[in-house]
Amino acid sequence: MKMLPGVGVFGTGSAARVLVPLLRAEGFSIEALWGKTEEEAKQLAEEMNISFYTSRTDDVLLHQDVDLVCINIPPPLTRQIAVKALEAEVRSLLSYPPAELCHGSVLAPGLLGGFREGWLGAAGRGSTESGSRRGDVPSPRVQRPTGVPVPAHWESINSTVCSCLRRSFLRGIGKNVLCEKAATSVDAFRMVTAARYYPKLMSIVGNVLRFLPAFVKMKQLIEERYVGNVIICDVRVYGGSLLSHQYNWICDELMGGGGLHTMGTYIIDLLTHLTSRRAEKVHGLLKTFVKQNTAISGIRHVTSDDFCVFQMLMSDGVCCTVTLNFNMPGSFIHEVMIVGSAGRLIARGTDLYGQKNTALREELLFTDSLPVNKGLLDKGFKDIPLLYLKGMVYMVQALRQSFQDQEDRRTWDHKPVSMAASFEDGLYMQSVVEAIKKSSRSGEWETVEVMTEEPDANQNLCEALQRNNL
Image 1 (cartoon, rainbow, N blue to C red):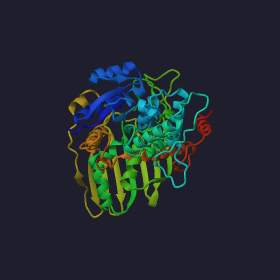
Image 2: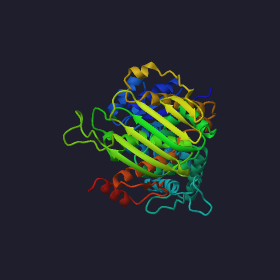
Image 3: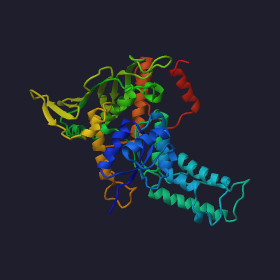
Image 4: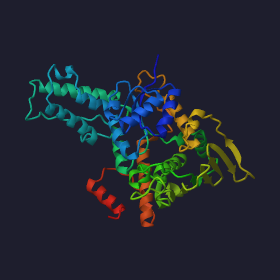
């Protein structure tokens, strides 16, 4: 009987608590759970009946029964784990080489380090030979080491190990990855680089809005020219405070906290996905109205935004306006409107409405009647709006369809998750977010520049200091 891949879950927050039962409902087995501390991991593991838990990253990534990792952790940690997950099997092989690769001998630490540096270095830099392209199998050149014992059959070991690594690469090494957004463009760029060198592995960003049938239908109708030529996009997201009962990453703008990074990134991605157009210039304003509350006081204060309004000028002259307001306790409002030359489409929550310019009133085009497990709502996941809960259900269903009927638990079918956001989409989202933040500081329109090479580390430090006015 063909089985779905075992899952390793990173995170112990609300998203992980929702994701675990949803995965199990679709037939996935949760093989491992990672928490920031052993206590956090143990608490959720016992609550969710997960046998293996840890606070060590490698314990999950090198777990033999884990073939898919779901990463729902603070943005500053996402890149590190996502990149390591994609490289997991190579790192395992380099750390614990099979005896047959060593021809019965034990590799000295210095010799093993040569293989690790040569292979992973080549994977990170890419081949420099003429005609090479991104995604090519890396070709390490491991020099004969000096200063360490070298077996007489060095050349044979070198050839055998590298050949084994190349075969592993071709059949897909590491783990398939589903993760949340990164904290910065640099982190997102490193994730893209890793994904390009391991193209057979799943590497997607979990923007659940793309999986909602209302937006699937909206994209289809736009392509069928229901609205004619798209000219305007208008989005409103209103809700209560994003802050928790204690100071954490969500309070810090530099750590990826705030409404723009938390929800705005997925709105940016959704609009590009729906219209097939990318933002070229942006203008934005970010404000923090609640800087302290009963749980966050004293020397600590909130730097992340709770109100954001921005405009995007996209290709072909499409104009977008987005308002994110998290100072409105009560009902969560999520409205996406696409206006064209022939009509408009409006997604209110998970329902889709439309109106042609020739019609007297709007019509209901789609209503989402998917029932959400009442247990999820009863457990107090009020910080996850129903819209996003349903999106997670549809995303997990798509994952199951992607992995089912595969001969190997690590292989997957691209079609069921074709609407998912890639790591490259994640880099684009982050680039737009950083341009909006830059615009908020300058008061000017800013050009969206998607990173094509990693900047110098000193430049990143200087920019961070400037943001803090130091």
